View 1 (tube, rainbow, N blue to C red):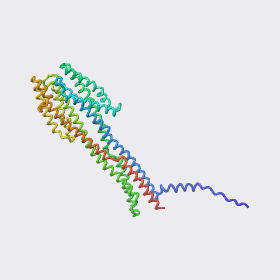
View 2 (view 1 turned 120 degrees about the vertical axis):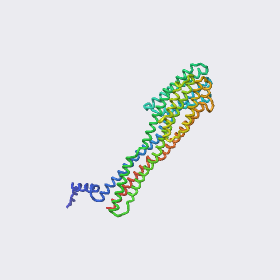
View 3 (view 1 turned 180 degrees about the horizontal axis):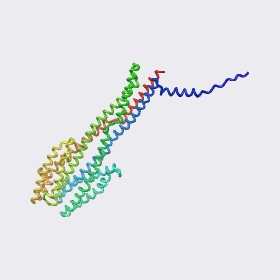
View 4 (view 1 turned 180 degrees about the vertical axis):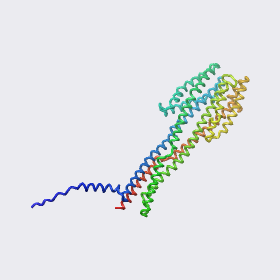
Length: 438
């Protein structure tokens, strides 16, 4: 007789539902293990979110400082050098013309160096500035206008060496082009690049609100959890959770230290940049005043009316809110520059008096000679004082930007790694606590 083994009954629907409820209760139930699991998920996710926010914020800040220290700083410096070189070239061209054909070699050498520097910096800027950049238009103006200017100057020199008065017309036309076309374009380029540099400073010094909010919230939740667990169980601290708390606190402290140090350096860099820009403007005003002084001599027309250009440039230089005042407000000692300006103004008055009295040769000698009491020597001293102050400001700007870069070393990844490790610590520490209830 064959015995048949009855088939096993299929699992009932009620048994399957019960299993699902059991699994769900592990996370949603009121018991301690379920509560611990929920807290573990919250802390772990919060740690990972904070890590991502820190990574984004840190890399953005480091990128802004890199832009400030490299591309935008290079463009701002190039724009300033172009501005100064063009103004200096015009001052040298007009000064050389006063010598009536015998242009001093030193003046010609300086003019050539200015034109070479301006051309080199224009080429560098053209490689960094895209066609849709607002700075592209003034850059194109200078690239196309500079050869026309130098052509006019060379024509003026040719006629001047031949003793023909026609050269004066070409010189005046070239100087007018410099004042009305090239220098305004250079100033526009400089303002555009300085604005971009300032935007980098603002982006780099922005308060990391999201990192602070998420990091502090994570730290407070973790501390509150640890405190309640300790009071409820009277047991030593969970190693994983404690390590995670230390990691979160370290990440926040890293951000605080880096932000304070970088912001201090960036504030100094911004101040130095403002000073350098103001001194560039001061130097250009001095050079334009020198050009006007020479043009008046070339025209052999004395009188205060023809000297208004010189007076206007000096008034703008010394005015309240002018470039020297701005430089002083940004930490530059301008006392020597003001003293040198007063000395040049007095020497210029003597030059104009000689020209007005018909002593043209004496006026020319005062303009281009080496007499320490002459206008030429006084201008050289003032020009050097402004250049030295500008060089000091630019060196200070470079050092401050370097300090900001050093302060944010590894900021893009360091705190993010700590927050990510904290998430791992929360997950492991709370998981081990849950296992104790099995």
